[in-house]
Amino acid sequence: MKLSEFLQQLTQDKLLYFALPVFMIAIIIEYQVAKEKYKRKDTQVSLLMMVFAAIVEFLPKVAAFIFFFYLNDISPLKDIVQRRWWAWLLLFFLDDFSYYWFHRLNHEVRLFWAGHVTHHSSEFMNFGTALRQGVGERVHKFFFWLWLPLIGFDPLMIFTMMGISLIYQFWVHTELVDKCPKIIEFLFNTPSHHRVHHASNIRYLDCNHAGMLIIWDRIFGTFSEELKGIDTPVYGLTENINTYHPIKVITHEYQALWKDIKRAQNFSDKVKYLFKSPGWSHDGEDKRAKTLRKNLHQDIENPIVL
Image 1 (tube, rainbow, N blue to C red):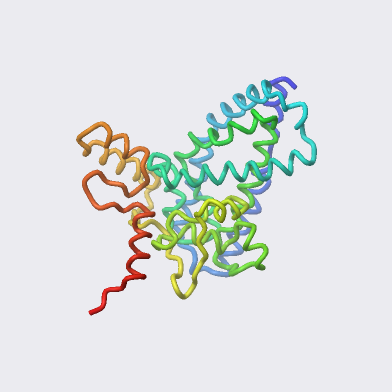
Image 2 (cartoon, rainbow, N blue to C red):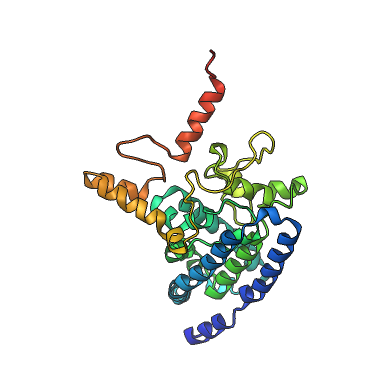
């Protein structure tokens, strides 16, 4: 198939367009059922972030699609994979594996976190928050899927599976569903698991990066169970930005990162601010998630007796 034909198919990929009206209806229903879980200005910002993310993603998405096409064209496996049923099943797992590492590194690399933090800036957990997409992350997102066309998957297959994953993830942004059956909780990302991911509690920081399958978090040691009553999730950032100004919501972490880079005296520390986890400091307290969690566990195991 020629590139022009693939691009023509891309323009006809309307999966998310069909899903969007359903999302809006779900938000209205959830609001009617649980008004206390919404705040008008917060939801307005979430909807604006969805629009901004779509605008920023447009050129990287087109560029990625073209690049995927040429990578797939040189793959020795393309004629084997094609669009067979087993290839779709395999792609389901490989796409989700790619998403896990994309999402995890968005939390563990500060430059990436600056582009993802928008999604976590809401202090509410609802379907509106699901649409508060990270804006800056749209620029580097597709690099994590580059290996898939090289092993034979065509770009339209990859983009379709990415769309299915995004649609699935919308439904885990809610407090109205408590726990699913145990087998579902064990295998899949659920509202309970994703509430943990959005929580600012030290116990939950940088956990549950799942897209559709929670198994990657269990395998790679980033899983945490929701412990309501013991440590009920508190949503938002460890230091909330307290603003609804859309530009500040998008840029606040980039601004903080730039200030830290300028403050560092030597070049190696400047580079570390870009690529180390959020919370790292060359001259202050280490507030990285893994450090805070380690200290929390030490405090629990060795309480101070007065």
